[in-house]
Image (cartoon, rainbow over all chains, first blue to last red; front, side, top):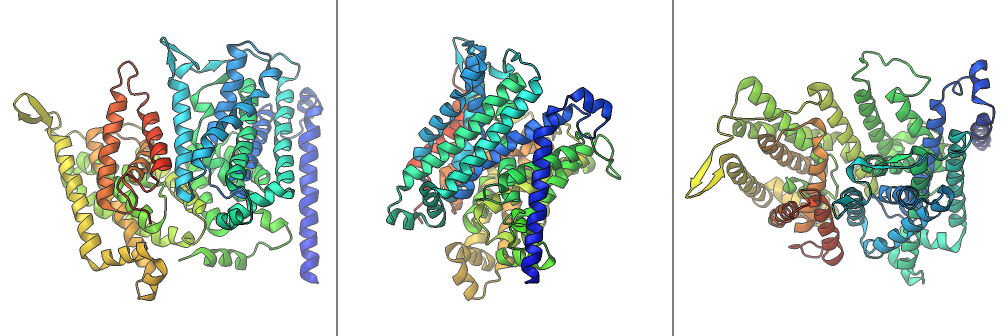
Length: 359
Length: 269
C-alpha cells in the first residue's frame, strides 16, 4: 500500500514536470525575444536557446524514429544517419537546383528517404544481429561518401566537398518558424510511435523482436513488416533532415552524415527507454542538454574545476564516454523505468541490473 | 589488425568499437619509445603487445564482462563509450598534432633488379605473418587457447567443465588488444597518427573480418588480403582519385553480407 502510494506520487510529479516543461517550450517563444531580454528571463534572454531547442526537437525525431526499427522491431540499425542526409539533400537539391519552394520540396524528403530504406532494407533486413548492424553502418558511410563524390562531366552533382548552399527562406521570425516545424515533426514521430504500439502492425513488430521464427509461424509477414518499420523510421528521419537543410541553409557531408549521430540517437533511445512512446524523446532532451552543457555552449554553465578552457571539450567527451558506460551497465532499461511506477532508483536496482547481465 | 578484432568478435560475440582506439594507443607507445629512448620501432612492438594485453585484460575484466549477457546493442554502445574515453585521454596527453615515426631506414628498400621494395612494409608483412602464426599457436596448442576455443563452441558447456569464463574472456580480449597494439606500432611507421585517426581502422577491421568469415585466423588473413586489393583497386580508378575507395569497400561488404553471410572462407555455424 505504501509502495503503491509512493509510485503514484512519482508518476504524478513526473507528469506535472513534463507538462510544465512542455508548456514552457510551447509558449515561451510566443512572447517576443526582445521583451524577454529586457525582462531578463533566464534562458530566453539568449538567442542560442532557440537554436538549441530546435536541435533538441531534431534529435527527438531521430531517436523516436530509431526506436521504431531498433526498439520495437529489435533490429539494431546503425546507419540511420544516411536517411537524415538523404532527406536533407533531397530538399536541398530541389530548392537550390530546381528552385522549388521549400514547402513543396519538404514532403519529398521523407518520401525519398523511405523509398531508399525500402530498397536497401529488402536485402539488409534478411541479416540478423551484428551482421545487420554492421551492414547498416556500411550503408550509412557509403551513402555519405557517394553524395560527396559523385561527379558528372567534372561537375559535382551534389555540391561535392564544398557543400550545398540554399537560399534563405524568407519568413518573419525564421527561428520561431523552424522551431515549431521541427517540434511538429517530433510530435508526428511520437504520434506515429503511439499508433504503432497500439496497432496490429506494432504487435507484429514486437513479435519479430521477441522471436522472429515464431512470429513467421503465427502468420506475420516478417519481411514486409520489417521493411515497413525500417521505411517508416527512415521517412521520419528524412523529414528531420529536410527541415534541417532549409533551417541551416548550408549542408555538406559533415553536417548531414555525421557518424556520431548514429550513436547519439541510439543512446538517447536507450537512455530514455527503448520500445516506449516517450522514452526516446525524454532521452533526447536529457542527453542533448547534457552534451551542450558539458561542451560549454549552454547559456547557463559553470567552470569545471581543474580544467583549462582549451581542454574543456575533450574532458566533456570523456565524461560523455563514462556516462555511456555507466548507463549501459547500470540502467539498461532506461530512465523511463523510474517514472512508469514499476521501479524506483535505489542501490538495489543498480545492483540487480549489474547482476542480470554480468558474466 | 583484423585478426585481433575477429578473435574478439568470433569468440566473445562482442563487436569491439574501441578497436581503432587500441590501435592508436599502440601507435603512440611506439612513437613515445622511439622519440624518448630512440628505440628501433620494430623492437617496440613487443612492448605494444604486452601493454595492450594488460589494458585489454583490465577493460574486459573490469567493464565489458559486466554486460556480456545483455543484448548485443549494449556491447556496441559500451565499446563506443570506451572508444570515446581512450581517444580523448590520448588527446589530453598528446594533443592533436600529427606524430610520425621515421627511423633512418624508412626511405630505403630492397632492390630486386629494377623493382625496389621498401623495407618498412616488407618487415611489416613479416611481422603480420609472424603474429598470425603466434596467435594460431596460442589458440591451438596452449591450455588457455583451447579454453578459448571451447568457449567459442559452447559457452555453457565450457563453464560446466570448469573453465574460468571471466579469466578466459579477459585473456581473449587482451590478445585482441595486443594484436591491435602491434598493428598500431606498424601503422605509426607507415603514416602519421593522431588520437582521432582510429575510427577508419575500426571500420576496416569490420570489413576484413566479414570478408574472411568469423572466428578463424586464416580466414581473417585472406579477408585482409582481399580488402587490401579491393581498396587499392578503388584508389586506382582513373580520374576519381581515392574518393571511392571507402564506398567500394563498403559496397563489397554489403554484397558479401547479403550473398555469403558466412564470409568468403567461413562455414555456417
